[in-house]
Amino acid sequence: MTERSVLHDTFVIERAYPASPSRVFAAFASREAKDAWGDTGDIAEAEPSTGPVEFDFRVGGHERFGNVYQGVSYTYDALYYDIVPGQRLVYSYEMYADGVRFSVSLATIEFVETDDGTTLTWTEQGAYLDGVDGPDAPRLRQGGTSEMLDGLAKYLA
Image (cartoon, rainbow, N blue to C red):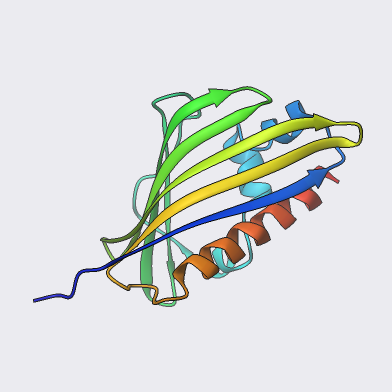
């Protein structure tokens, strides 16, 4: 019998960008934009997956993609719950490794106008399942998200 466990974690990342909330939000709203800034390097090294690819940016829409990295097939499957242009995104996503779900997360991204541009606040609540990524799973997810947001800064520059 397989040992079952769940590790819960929440992290918050806040970033300032010298761009309007509508411009920062737009970077999340198209597949081309997300592809340009969302790759943290490991995706570029991965092979494309043969699974479904979808980007349906609307409430009730899905974002799906996969790749093969170091012989493991990874899948990302997200569902958008709330989209307020220029202000907020709320979505959940599941991650799979070789068809086995290893995490389920709820992400809320807020865009607030400032004198210098936009403050983005990313809050993520995760359930990391069955120790697949080990006890460092939350720290690894936060690190990967932080790297993506670094890519967003470069994209917006």
